[in-house]
Length: 350
Ligand SMILES: Nc1ncnc2c1ncn2[C@@H]1O[C@H](COP(=O)(O)OP(=O)(O)OP(=O)(O)O)[C@@H](O)[C@H]1O
Ligand SMILES: [Mg+2]
Image 1 (tube, rainbow, N blue to C red):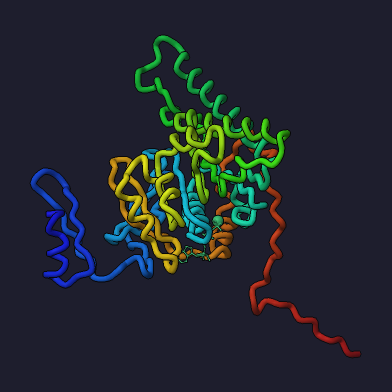
Image 2 (cartoon, rainbow, N blue to C red):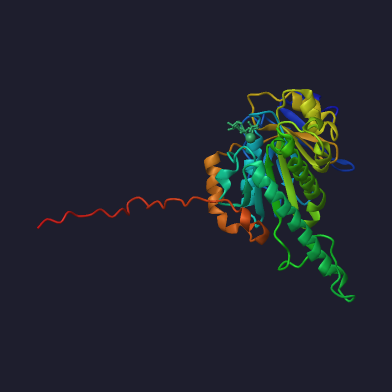
């Protein structure tokens, strides 16, 4: 069926025919009449849920769901202006409506993530701040492991279903809130100018690797974003990359960059990523863990709308005491008087 999809497409005169096997003996054919990625409209019925965010549209007109429980960490790669930050923005606003602590490291001085400060539990906008925030996150991970361990060792008589190896097995009132760490432009953490900074860089990289290694069971997830992510960034780069299971590759300028994202999981997808045109920012190739891949595109979401969502959901930010020192400053919003209610003074003439 997959081999004849191209002929069916011409025979039926449709834009594309997608074949998916549902179970042995049953295949699903999806006919798409036009290029749905040109103007993205998300399907009306979305199967979201806790830590499952429908973030983009696939070319077969279904939603691409970013599922943190299934794929804890992800790498988002792409050349400049390819739509990486738009992807993060969609994801962040999706998560904002859930009881999830959002943490940002944006070493571009915070231009991408600072507008969401009202919903963020912690924000670092330069490597100095990141160097303080990362150890706090590692400490939080270790504390959560202690919590899990305490539950495992409660008493020999503990019922089996109460023994757990990750935070999800803890009873709801004891379970710490999940944390999602967004890193926009990861290379800024790696690149150093002087010998003195090198030590700090190595520490940060080690901490990121540890977070990726230990995070899942502690409910801490990474979303790492960068223009290139190869061995040339230095010690630890490929090791960190290997920990990031999910791969999203936007438009890239050379094959080597596409290989950094997709080469080790879906080699054919590399060509698809190289073929992305510049006039469709936001278009990306996403590699599945199964070795398959598909083309996706995020819906357009303006920075102002995303920031408004964050302000509206600010009260949903869960309490994570370890992150309190890193909470970003949020300038108070001027309160707008509803139109028509303006009290106009009446001139008093006597
Ligand atoms: N899905 C989309 N639909 C329409 N426009 C988009 C989409 N995604 C991104 N854009 C536009 O493309 C431009 C670049 O997007 P974005 O800032 O996300 O790129 P970037 O990859 O983060 O670039 P940089 O590496 O320079 O930060 C923006 O002007 C944005 O409005
Ligand atoms: Mg960006």
